[in-house]
Length: 153
Image 1 (tube, rainbow, N blue to C red):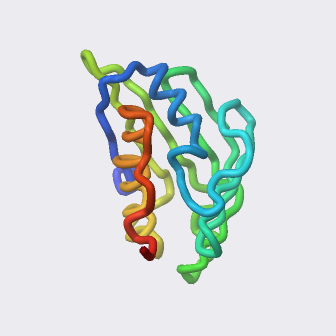
Image 2 (cartoon, rainbow, N blue to C red):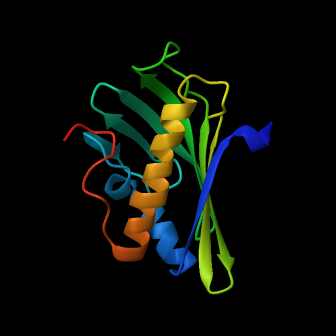
């Protein structure tokens, strides 16, 4: 069952420490309106992500191993575009950081975001954008794209 959780990974030239710092700067790469509210860089921190009236989720940092691993536990969620509005509640968002030769791999897994849940298609597409474009852009260039590809121009 674990292999059904949404997973994606990126490989960058930066160090694990630089990658770790970028992930913990979630308000910069996890964009939206108004975006991330609260602290996102210490064990036990609680923060909320909002994207208009479409998505709201609250997360607690339950694991934080410098330069290696970060886990956000979703304590509450409200997704307006699915029948079960709290689909994310109880899920874990996991970042695993590993040195691979001269590069650093970030393996992202949303434990509980599986094909059987209604938001899987939309949510996995959004995570793909946030991890593979926004987070990777922040890590490699210090910048993130200016808008979400699904947003109205």
